[in-house]
Image (cartoon, rainbow, N blue to C red):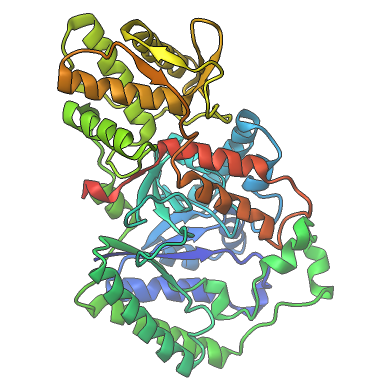
Length: 483
């Protein structure tokens, strides 16, 4: 089983004179000395701080591993808060500015090209995945992961490593929890045993890879999460006020030394475990991130069959529902023009899901013959070409609207009919259908979980995050199938 190891590197709070900048340096050195690849997700503000302090030795040690971007700063306002306050286009532009600035500052501080973007704490929004795709990068700790393994995925066109995952009986491929255990020998031994049990369970479940976050570097020496001292309740506390306020507290150097020794033991455990293959984020993307440029005729047929059989927007294929919807429309129009289905159609990776709620029931339910089926396919493609997202609704000839799900179902049934009967059906009932994949609701709720964060302002309206997060599950597909 492949193992992707990450460390969120965030501390902008602890004074330099404490000497704890040595900790991320030592973690990186241990990985390098043991020959195990790791990925450090660094907040841009933390990267700048190391640069400003002249800690080229820390930057050089960490640069021997792999550097990712962990948002812009360790304080409010977060990207997700900005996204929650705006509709899609405005929110995306703000997130784009914040993420690209963070990327630039991390790249300049470390003098390397970062390998990914990542979410920090509850700071996650679907918009961040779009920016990752625009930068040609994967996204770390994204909520959207599909069944049955809930492992690596594609979402909004970006390769995604999952973090918080919906409740399921599947053995989930994520492990963390050594933060406070490293400095306590009994706790370390107990958690190492839990890690071994987790590995065995994931191997039995057939998980191809596991994402592991052993520890935040600052939690090796800090007794509490410093975020709560920087921006409690979404209020930014100026740095000059930090010394006179309640402090997070730090461990003794003896505890830190024990933590570092145990950390080396953990890395050696990983190195020598017969069922683990530690790989970097770029290696994982190379192995699991391949997607064909075209969708084959049988792939479209299989996806259409699943949709008809389950009466749902299925997520168990290699392609996203958005890619399938566009593929079905292109293939049916080709059949209409030439009398034969194409062997393959071009895959469209950049098209987003709808940006507003589709109708569940058509305003004027009716039957569709070959002409109307072709017009629905053409209308969908025109909307995609114009807006670069799936339309929430399409207009029927009488001016009434029909929701995306109903269109998707109709195109699926039409495609099955063409494959099996050689012609478009004479009458397809256009009737109610889901707005998005069934899993979308639970994924939307995870984005909505920002409401539980102690780091954002009270009474913020999180409904946009929920809506956009669930609707973009039209762009969700498993990535592990590409290995």
